[in-house]
Image (cartoon, rainbow, N blue to C red):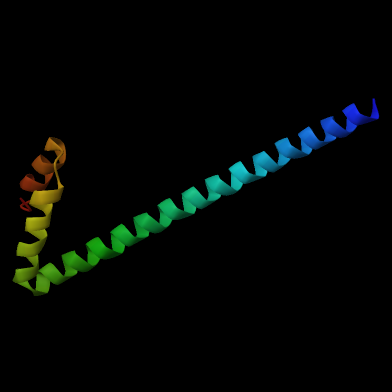
Length: 84
């Protein structure tokens, strides 16, 4: 019986470790997502600010938008706002 107790204890410890790993992976994914959103905000903001000062920037941004934005709903929105 002692062997079974040891196996059960190890299985319990394994389950606890797996739960900790899952929690850490979730934290990392959330942090990465937050950082990506911050990058998007900063890069987008920088381009919008530069468009105000430099008309050539706008042309480049529009070219990228035309190439990258494919969803009809998003294209319609950007067109309505004068970006496409």
